[in-house]
Image 1 (cartoon, rainbow, N blue to C red):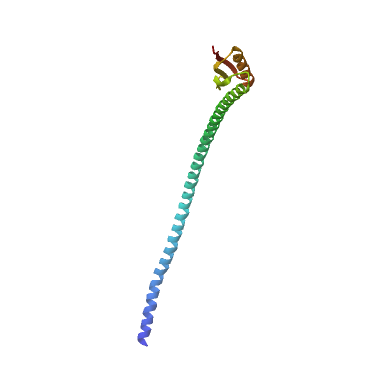
Image 2: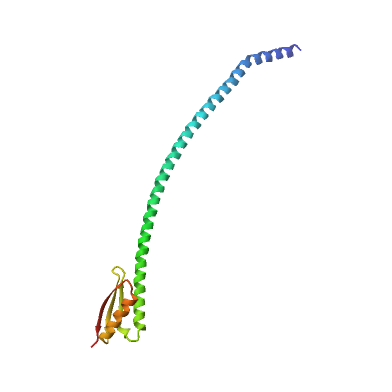
Length: 162
């Protein structure tokens, strides 16, 4: 029993000797945790600030790009409008050509088999070229062209066959 008491006494002495060390270790861990927590909070604030700066820069670039897209869209819209006007003029000119040629062919008093009809959209001019058998047919062809090509000038370059 004496041996057990001595052993128990030794254990108690060792435990008492180690208690302050454990207490110091425990306090050290708490202090380390507090310091690490503070670092994390500080780094989180820094990251938040950097994120806000980056977001602001991205927003500014987005506005800049948006402005350029708007300018480009307006430019494209203007070009489309110009192109549509040009196409519209060309279509109008082609329609005049067809309308005048059809009217000449339908008029039984005119031999339209040798008449060419050209239309210039830019100058809004209808030109009659070719040959007709008589001066009366030349005059009749010009009259038909003037009636059908409203808003267009008519140039009569027809020649009378001899």
